[in-house]
Length: 223
Image (tube, rainbow, N blue to C red; front, side, top):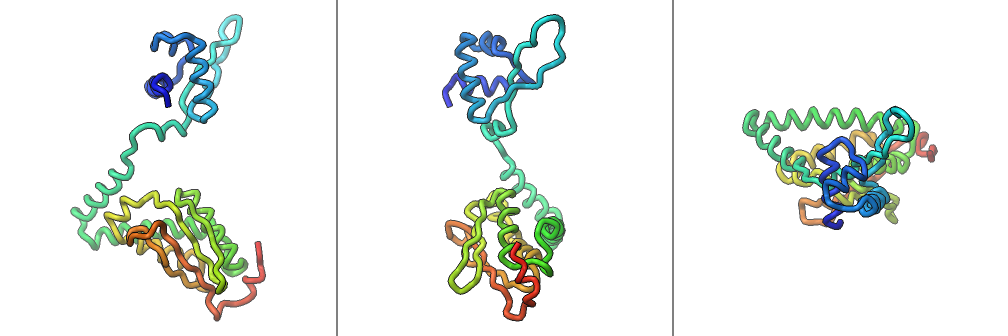
């Protein structure tokens, strides 16, 4: 991003919205130059035209520009640091047992959400459930996909970990995650972690194997 575009983004961060002439005057640029920068930023999804206010008098009101939600990624983000600090504070205030209770409560809330998002194990096949879980995890930022193995098992691969810093500070997060997958997918599968980012692997991966004693009624449902 050029210096001029960065200054425009920074300015729009400080105000609710601004017109081309207002930005041009603030940066000693021509209206044409500012408009070109805004059009490029718009193409990249960083700025958008703000809703027009009701017209006053004749003529259309000038176009006002504002940042999009995507532009927030251009500014410092300390969510990871804050999470690590909170974990440390919980551990200091409540001890390891207290931290475990917090993780358990978080896991129960996640499980409830996952069970609502995944098909009922009684009437759905294992592949359908695993693929839906991958979609849910991708929406949470894990960049997940499902791969089929020659032995019939499925591997849920997560190419990114958006909570890596927190997981490094609290190993219990990874443990509860494995339990979460097992509970969400149902009793007819076994979930095993086969790759672990915190163990030096490039990603996290989980092998899901259908239990040999699983009923066949749900397995016949493909979608």
